[in-house]
Image (cartoon, rainbow, N blue to C red; front, side, top):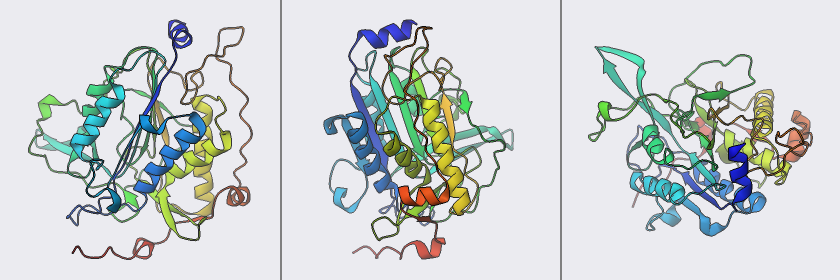
Length: 356
């Protein structure tokens, strides 16, 4: 109730940090290029402006395309951390913050007494010039004040705990495990060696649930642990442009909602429906199960999507507009979205031209 009163008492502002890493200028054969990540970032920016009234001046977009080669918006580690500080700096009660990342995810695995244990895996995002530990993101988000909201869209592997939260939501009866070999169209890298700056005793390996109470924190993760995020192709514009499977699912749902006030849980349920359609159309190379992580004080069924909720029923609970039905049979989805397919990695794109 205290958080609800804070939401109603103050006007809200909206900021977003959106990162898409293609790795096109990374001179390492161990880092396959991601073809759809820059397009993912541009799509998230367009969706927030179209449906949720985000101002373009309050969206910081970091991508590594040919157009940004000589600009200061490349997704380096320093710029991503600076963008995260910009995102949370000055946050007040009622503010809405969005962080979206498309690219590779990986982990640094540390030997514990000569054995490689799960609890010694440090999950991280792969940016243009380094890896970014999830715990480095926690250091910034731990400063958020009660009454604000932060939503993350992580179209990558190893990103379920982008926020230091412990709650997890999924309606899947079974979550299969399977990490295929590294290849184009798959957004994960094998375990990395220690970077020169890495000191295990300075960084927690697992989420501790220290995300601030009273802050609505949610993470839309593209896949479960020991799975990988994938790219699918949409043919709506005549080309086979790839995009992240999670990004395309989120875009499908948000275009259907058109900014209606609905709860986080309803949005996630519809995203899961899109993934079921992926399976029906056989467009995924390997198992991929989206998950929703949330803070302990934020229930997906009682928190509105993106914007703070100010409408409540007579019993004091949140009152949302009914969610319009989204029938995602393969036939209906083909009419709503371009047809999707996943070509074999060798046929997705010709290799990039050699550098001059």
